[in-house]
Length: 416
Image 1: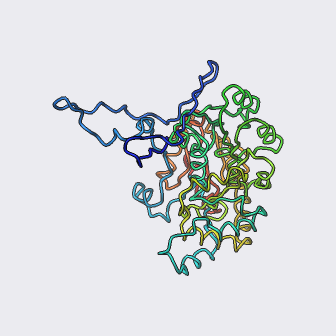
Image 2: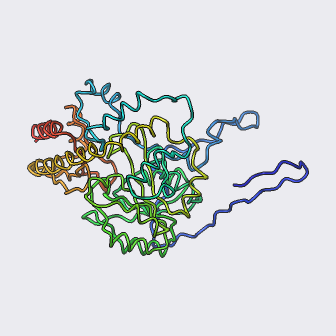
Image 3: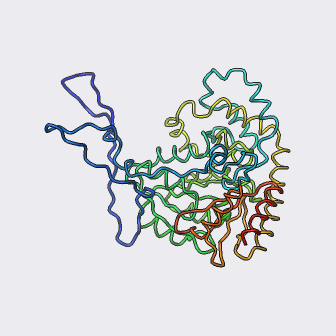
């Protein structure tokens, strides 16, 4: 946690050591240590002739030895092999991907790339300039990442010392909890209300009692599609905590982004992505708006070539066709309403209204949610089921094209 100066063999010294402060947990607060289901504890290395046998995992940080990996959605190739179906015969409604893909300018730009053998611009200047024009926020407030996921991890690496705490409001995007685990932080879970709205009073109490560093919020929230109003966000911004607002799905909400707010609130970060809006999930392009007093430190800590040439070229090309992006958004919003209406007609599903490109459904009438997901998979239709306790009885359906909706509803009717 410092730099050892070896310039003089006779005097070793630590330069600027960092000593994380220890805080005692308060008895009435439940703090969830950051880990998914722990893996089996490592056994002690074998001892031979009085010496311990050196094993590779002995070099790994202790908290990572009990960390379970993140469970991602399977790609087409793996699904195809498992289901025995061609990728084009699979209806993939499990990862909130944009089924229309990017504008045609993206393929043209990728085919015309001149210098793929040269390292990318470490500052993504061209893309940040395009984003500044698109958002109306000066480029100096913007940082681009290899997906918003990279920025979530970068924020944690810059803000959290081992043992620090974050606030999470489940059910929500599970990457916040996962990245906190990777960074040795603890998670204070403040569950949402039964209608999936935030429990602001409980959040306020936790912030006052436990002194967490930051809170991660998603609007619209994944997996239920609910939004955070300006009034609620302003109440949370009044608290002494860094607020990271994830707007991955904001385009589908009909609301304005809060990116401009970072100029006024120094405890607010807003994250965005090209995965949903522009159909670039496979190329990994995300970006964030940061207060100037924060962004300078993220520039220092980020990997220099984190956004590939292909990713930057694609994102810039996508922004050149705002009409296409708007038309695709409108098509998905129209299909979302049709899908919601059709799901309501099924006796064993209770769908929730959504401001995003997915719909969360409670599985009722004694039907098992996990089995429903598995039965649909056998029929070539993929939806999302959750193993956590908050959502074990729910499934989430991404909004696809009209023919995807038709196939899904046909299979659901057959299962009923």
